[in-house]
Length: 191
Image 1 (cartoon, one colour):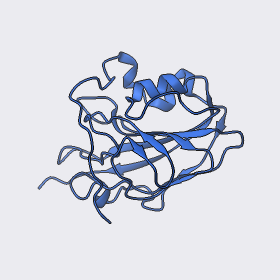
Image 2: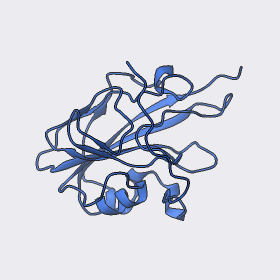
Image 3: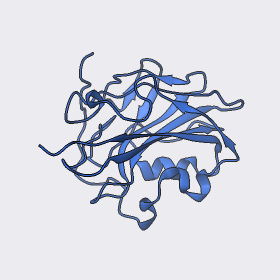
């Protein structure tokens, strides 16, 4: 598997200045859902493999979820609440995932707009890059927890590719039919 390309880097405008950003997306009032969907990975159960970290290849894991009746699209937000400088650190934002798609394959490209496996938009990470940015906790830190949160939405989001997490969260507010998460851990041992 080839390492995905990192496309754009933006130094500012990451949308992470507001105090509400300390909450995981699933905890936001407008994103809570009465229904739960199951989120799983064919790449890991609970510990994220080295290959998915930025210490190695940094390739996105396979993520799948249960289909939700009435969903018009899905969104995925990956966050690390154990980060120290940006809480939570946003590692991945994918949205306008077509309703018929319930799996993102391993190794997606780091482009704002994907055409394979379907037309999907990706947004900015806290690092300022587009697409998946794998775990990279400081060496010797206790395990960090990575929350792969999936939201079933009653519409597609009226956002361009490359949006920041807070814009995606705002656009999703009040439109979540179901939500769920998979939490994986990753730790980089001290040398």
